[in-house]
Each structure stands twice: as structure tokens, then as C-alpha cells.
Amino acid sequence: MTHRTSLLASLAALTIAATASPALADSRIFTAHSNQDGVTIEQAFRNGDELDIVGRGEDSTLFRIDSPSTPVGCANRIEFVTSTGERIDLVSDMCELNWEVTVKVQPAKVVETPTAPEVPAVPVVPEVPAAPGGSEEIVAPIDGASLSQVVSVAVDDPALTIIAVRLDGKPVNIIGRKGGAVQFEITGTDEGIACDRELGVIFSNGKQVTRQTNICLNDWSIMVATGAETPPAPPVAALPPLAPTEEMVWIFSTFENGASLGHGIPETDASDFGAVCTPRSGRILITLLDAGVPGLTPGSPVPISISGGGFARTYAGVGSPFDELAGASLPQVEVSAKDELWDAIVREKALNVAAGPSPFVLSLQGSAGPAREFLAMCSDVPVAAPQPPRPGPAVGPGIVANYYCADGSAFAVTYNGPQQIATLAQAGAPPLTLRWDPNGPIPRYTAGPARLVLRDDSEVRWSRFGGPALSCRQR
Image: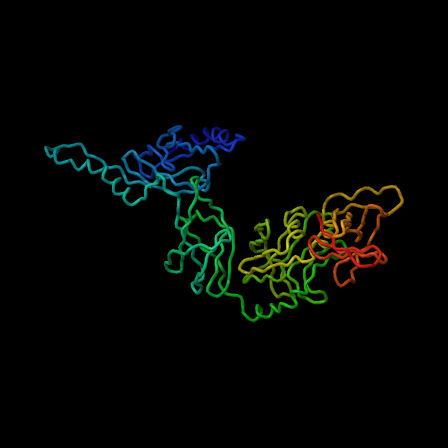
């Protein structure tokens, strides 16, 4: 055992060299040893193929996994053969084990030196190989067989019953129940089973929990934490008048030494998302204003998962300072102004947001314009040096968007958040500077009769002379 660590270290370079090739082929070296003194691992088979032995330690054997066309996965099903002839079929998460596997085997049979004439009676020794025979009858042969594994999911609240399970957004077939746990079977490729998955669980009271988890850990058993108590029904029932929700709008505003982006109903306290920043800091603090997490205290950890379209990420959030209006600590997280979340807020139609056991859908209708202005102010990109006076409106730093209209025309708009202006450039016409109208019924920029109305993530309505507006989309 004492030489195992140094032996692994000496082979680390080999592992790195094997995986550094630009081709898709991959190789991994792992160490296997038994839990019994005097018993060594002599052979290893993966998908029916015997693995090459690349070295031996004092009581360890080093095997190499070669994959000619794809990277070697973390989860692997390997059949080991010991020096006693025993065969063990084992499914392991090699990444979690740091590519070092301990195989539980039967102790070696010790044959005492015969001291009496009863030596002929010792033919019990031939029965030693009989043990592997019994083991092979229990373990399904791996030659040509697909890799599968039964996963168990339980909940920490005995009052809840699991009625459905989803894996990576797709429902799975529940094959059994034991106590408060449910079981389902998962299959993998020849390279193994992916461990890091999105697990969704639906309970008998209608509550849903979705989280990223490693399904290979704890012998393929998962415990879903829901919190000790269910959120009180009256407050939850008071929130959903859907009519007000449909009236929520995205609002960008500035204040002394700061800027904010919010989603809510103007002139009310109804809101579900808020973000603030110090100009040019590059950092933004997000607070989920309508996500109650039972038992959340200021500074305590709370996972915040946001997904939608091609975006999915879980952030390490914390409880906010006690919020007097909400009467509780709220989930919040600080992110970079360059985080991919902001691109999703500009591009997508909606995002699924979950903090602890309280998921909700964040509408992104009309978010593009206010979000761009907010990011222009929060970004840590340095402000360009002032230019000498020149004819026409100056185009300062900002976010440029190109639009194509239904009549075949096109134009570009530079949104400048700090100055609350938008500069529109169109072929055949002089540049036009429009100013943000904070009193408009919907987000818009105006300059005399000209108006640029922000409809949704990528659509605007444009009229230069106050006549019928053109519908234009961002490309």
C-alpha cells in the first residue's frame, strides 16, 4: 500500500500524454487493488475486452482503458479477476474515486501444512474455484450486454410521496418502490453512464424540485432535500392573480452612484426580479424578489438555478439581509456583467428560475432594450476618451444592434445606457439621436415626432416622421 501513491504519481504523466492528443482517441490508467491482504487483481475486462496491464505495485495492478473514438467516461462497468480465481463485476465512478478502485473480495483460503496422515482428506481445496462459479451465476455477463444501473431516489420529508421523476427534462419509468424511495433504471453507452445529470422530482402535494446532481455517488442513491416545512398556502394563493403578472414590465433606471434593472408592475410593490450595480464595476447583484425559501437566513447558502433555451446554470447564492417588505431573507447572487445569463435575458422568451424549493417562470417579454442599457452602464469596459467636436450626434460607447424591417430597409442603433440615449444610423439619412422616454406606456426612445418602441427581445417599431411605424427585427 505504501508505494501506491508514488506509483500513481509516476504514471500521471502517461495519463496526461494519452489524453492530450488532438484526436478523439483517449486512454486512462487506473489502479485496482483488493481489500484483502494476499489477494491481488490479475485481470480486468471492460465491455468484454481484456484491459492491458501497464504496471504492478506492492499489492496493486495498473490497467489502461483505451477508447479509439471517444473520451473515456467517468462511469465504467469492469469485471475483475483475482489471484484466487474470484470474478467481481463492479460499476464505479472513476472520476469520483480519482481512478483508484478498491475491489471487495473474499479472503484467500489458507491451506495449513498437513501434519497428520489425514492429508488425503484435504481435497476440500478444489472447492475454492467453486466460489467464482456461484458469483458468475448472480452477475449478468457483460459480453455484448448494454450498461444499465438501477438508481434510487428518496425524499427527506416522510410526509411527501414521490409521484414522478424526470432526468435531463425527460420522464423516467419508475420500476419499483421501497419505503419512501422510488427506483428507475438508466442505461449507458459502451463508454459508461454520465454521472452529472439534471434530476427533477414531482411530489404528491404538487411541489417540484429540480437540481443538478451526481447520480453515481452513494451507491446510486439520491436524497432530495425539500426543507422541513411546506410554504404556507395563504401567501402562495395570494400571489397568482395572473392578470397583474401579465402587466409586469422590464424597467431600467438610474440613481445616485448606481443603476437598476427590474421586472414588476409599475407603481406597485409586485416584482419578481431585481438587479443593481455600481456603474463601470463589472459586477451585478441579483435578488429574486418573489422566491420565498423557508428557513433562509441572511448569509446562508441557497442554490439558484436558471435555465431556458440553450442556457442552464446553477449559482451559489446566499440569503439577503432581512427584507422588511418581504418579511424574510431573499435569495441573491452576485455575477459578472459578462455572464452568459445576460445574453439569455436579452435573447430568450422566458427563463425557469428555482431557488431552493420555490421555482417560477421569469417572463422576458420586452427585456432586451432595458437589459442592454443596464449592461452598458454596469460594464467595466472603459469609457472612450472625448472626441473633438464634429457635426452630427456623437456616438458614445454602448451596445450596437442591427435591425431589418418589413419593407426591406435596415438601420443600426447604438444604445448608450449612461446617457440614456440611442443613436440611429440609416442609409440615406443623417444620424438621429433619440432620448429615453421614462413616462411612456412601454419602453421607447423619442426625438420630436420620431419614435423607437422596444417590443420584445429582438423586435422594435420605428417611425422617423411620426407616421405608421415599421416592424423591424434584430439580426
